[in-house]
Each structure stands twice: as structure tokens, then as C-alpha cells.
Image (cartoon, rainbow, N blue to C red; front, side, top):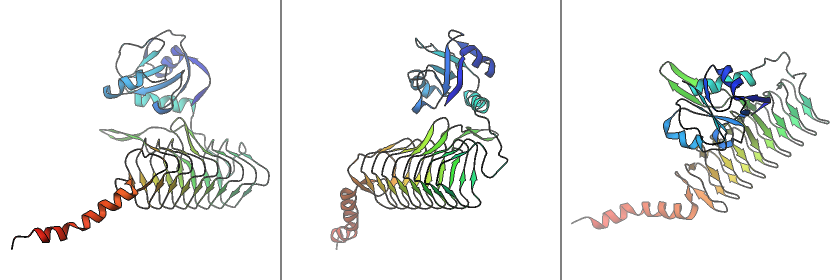
Length: 311
């Protein structure tokens, strides 16, 4: 997420009421999670296990809960609670703005696009040409929808990320300031939920088709011409490359990559990245043929045990 205008390290430290390490005029251009950071971005880290990863990332400003050696060409913001202060930045630069109409006056809707009754279109939403939005669809602020897109009834685009910190007093949610982007010729079935990014974008690529009742987590990127059947659950920060097929009730863990043209059979559980151009099945998902050989072998165990009995 880029700020509306560049800020200095001193300005950000004043906003957060924290100390800093570096030139007070060091440029700060935005904020992002570690998997999408760029030069000029702030990234936060609050556990020693991830200090090196944050300090060595592309981010040039690290919001951290301990004063450490600052890498050359970077700056630090020293906070007693980086999670809280990252939320403070999101709230400052991307505050929630309530709506006063079912279709916001700031929404831009293209030609020949049909929006059925009882839809909600939030602030600064952009919808392209020749789209069909069926009844009771909710499209949260800042979503970007391309041309020739169909969204069926009851779908929600842009709910907050399922991202919490466990504190003694309860769960503290990381605020979401990102967007949902649907490219051209995307079809979304009924009752789907596609969460917006925390700071970046959740993206559904051109020509991809989603069935009913699918969950797509925050910051996940789905490529072009993917087919995803009903009741699939995809966690946050997943990359699904082009032309992947995912059949019904598949569950996919966060932060992994599904390679191009992979096929995942129904009710599989994906716990690690999968190579493209292969078929997968089972929990944990593995090569289709290997998994079926494994199942066939397991079925032979009673017979083998019977033969091994001592008479």
C-alpha cells in the first residue's frame, strides 16, 4: 500500500510516537507485508525468529520491537508493539469510511453493466464494461473489477483478512487496507467470499472461473484461466499459477505456490507447494498415481497380516 504522498522517517516516527534509527529525512513511500514489500516500504516484525528476514527484505524501513544494527541504506522505527503501530498506520492512511448509499457516488460503473437489486457497491469501487452483478452482492471499498465479469448472488468481495495476534486480553485483528481485483472475463459463483489484502491486493486472474461457496484468503493471487470447484478454501498469501484446476472441497494452507496447470482432486488437503503440470490427490496432497498406489497397498495389509498369523 503506497501512501498518497511521500513521508519522511521523522514524520512517521512522530505519528507513531516512537524512536527511529536513520536520517530523519529518509523517504517513506508506503507499507506492506513482507511477501510484497518494495524499496520505500515499511515492514513490521515483532519476533526475533523473523528479524533477519525483515531486515534483509526489500523493505527499506523496518518497524521492530528491539534496537538492532541497521543495515546500510535502511532505517528503523523502534516500537514497543509493532503490530499495534502497523495497525495505527493503516488506520491513519486507509481509515474506514462509512457509506451513505447502496451504490456509492464515488463508484465508477462501466457501460452496459447490470447491477441487480439489493447490491452494495462501496466507496471508490471500479467496475468495467459488460458486467453482470446479481442481487445481494457486496463489493467493499476500493475493489477493482474488469470487463465482462459475472458475480452471482450473495458473494462478498473485500471482507477483512483473517489475521489475528493472540494477546492475554483476546485476539487483536490486523487491520486490512488492501483491495480485491478481478481481471477481465472472471466468473464468480454464488456465496463466495474473497478477502481483501492486508496492504496489497487479492487478485483473480483473467478468465478464471470460481464455482459457488469458495473462500479466497487475503493477498492470494490466482492466475489466468483457473477452474475452482465449490467449497474450496484457499488461505492467505497463496499463489495459484495459470490454468490450475482445483476440484471440490480442497483445502490449501497459507503462503504456498500451486504450479501452472496443476490439477488437485476433490477433498485433498494441500500443505506444501506443488509443482505444475501434475495431478494431485489426498491429505497431504501428493502425486495422483503415487497416492493411489499407497491406498492400494494399505488395503492389502489385512490380507498380509492374515497370512502372517501363526497357526
